Length: 90
Image (cartoon, rainbow, N blue to C red; front, side, top):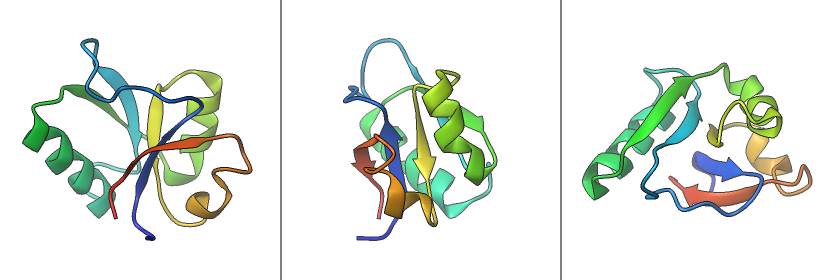
């Protein structure tokens, strides 16, 4: 239970008609690959935006992204910071 997580400030439907802007911690990371595989296997379209892993929280909170993939210590503090988990990629 310690894999990458897709988080947002509120519950969102990842498979909604309008593609979500999802922050990913780099294009060549295992977290980005796990998300790409998940989306591909379900035919879900999304706009993946590379963001430094420690900026994902900020960019989701500011509204620049609909949601984002968090890794490392971000997984420990996500609920305290007001985020909800949309998807656990672990």
